[in-house]
Amino acid sequence: MVANVGIRRILAPNPGPMTLDGTNTWIVGDMRGVVVVDPGPRNAAHVATLASLPVRLVVVTHHHHDHTDAAIEVAERVGVPLRGFDEQWCVGADPLVDDEVIDVLESPLRVVAAPGHTADSIALWIEHHGEHGAMVTGDTILGRGTTVIAQPDGSVDDYLATLDRLETFGEARVLPGHGEELPSLSSVVRAYREHRLQRLAEVRDALSRLGGDASVSEVADLVYAGVPSSVRQAVEASVAAQLAYLRG
Image (cartoon, rainbow, N blue to C red; front, side, top):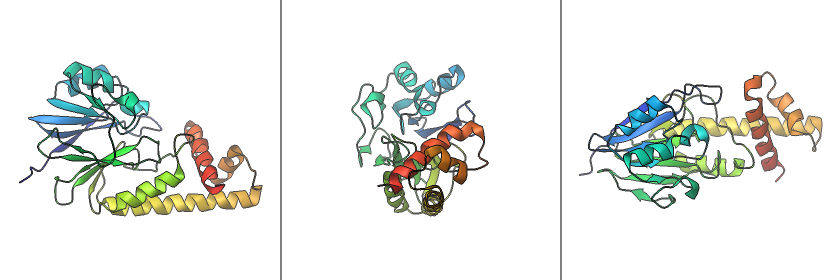
C-alpha cells in the first residue's frame, strides 16, 4: 500500500502586488525525506529553514525569480539535485518531462506540463494525499485573484488547454504558488476559465469600439480601468497576450 504523503507550506517573506502574501514554498513528504517545491527568494532565514530539512530534491514550477532565486543555493547547500522543465533550472539532473513520475519519496509525484502562464510552467500531482489528492499549481492557479499570462513567454491558447487538462483531476486540493490553498481543483478551473473567457470578450468588445489595430495601452485603459499603477506592467503584458490570441 502506497503511503499517504504529507504536505505543508512555508511562506516566503516576499509579499508584494504580484506575490500576494509571498511565495508559497511547498514541502512534500515527511521527516524521512522531502521534496522542496519553489524555494522562493534568497532570504537567509528562509534558505536556512529549507536547508535544515531532510531534502531529497528541489523542484521549481517555472522560472520566475520569486520562485527560483533561492533554488540553486538550497540544492547546493543540502547536496541534492534541482529540477525544472527548463534545463536552465537543473543542477545535477535532467529537465522534468510531462507525465514523468518522480519517485524520490515513498509516494510518487507526477509532473503535469502546464504551459500558459509561462512556457515552462508545470504542476505536480500528488495522488496519495487525502481523499482526492493534491495539485501543486505554481502560478497557473493562485489562491486568490487571477493568473497573468504575459507575452512573449505566456500563451492564452496554451493556458486554456492547461485548464482543460487540470480539470480532469477532479476534486484535488489546490496548492497554489501564492495565496491560500483551495478545495476542488475542477471547480477552481471552471471559475478561472469563465473569468478568462469573460476577459477575452471584453477585449474583443474593446477592439470593436477602438478599432482592430488598437494598441495594448488603449485596450488596457478601457478593459482594466481603475487597476492600480503598481500592476500596470502586468496588465499590459496580459492584454498583449489576449490580443495575440484574438488576432490569431
